[in-house]
Image (tube, rainbow, N blue to C red; front, side, top):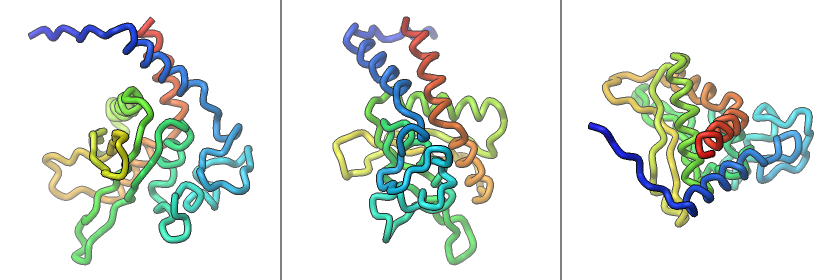
Length: 194
């Protein structure tokens, strides 16, 4: 079966082009701090390894600093300035020693093209066979905003006993140079549009 692509209006294409150009134009972490609560921006060392990152990336740094294993991904998302983390979990074992909560990150996006770029990034990692598990981006209902929210989460269909350490390593792989990779993918998508 052949699927005919949808006809896109000039306004829709212009909105996608604008969203892609806006992402590409965002400053780097060295140029401006991506952390919402950053109080001492040091351009040369602005990274998820900053000792203040766990607190600076959180909307409630005292009571709910980010968990260590999601800091890199949250930092990279914040570095886009257009994708905002609204919830995260590094994954946890239950009292019985079994995996209780899966690692995942929920985010808002200023345009639906940004989750699409994220998915292309994740699929590229999967194609390179570097990840232990399959990951996906799904539309979610976080319920605190009218904005669309999305989850980055593992796709564990058919996996009976996932390993938390491997899932957390996958999160680190997804985070590696994510902001810059999204900009590269945005440039490629612009070429496809033109």
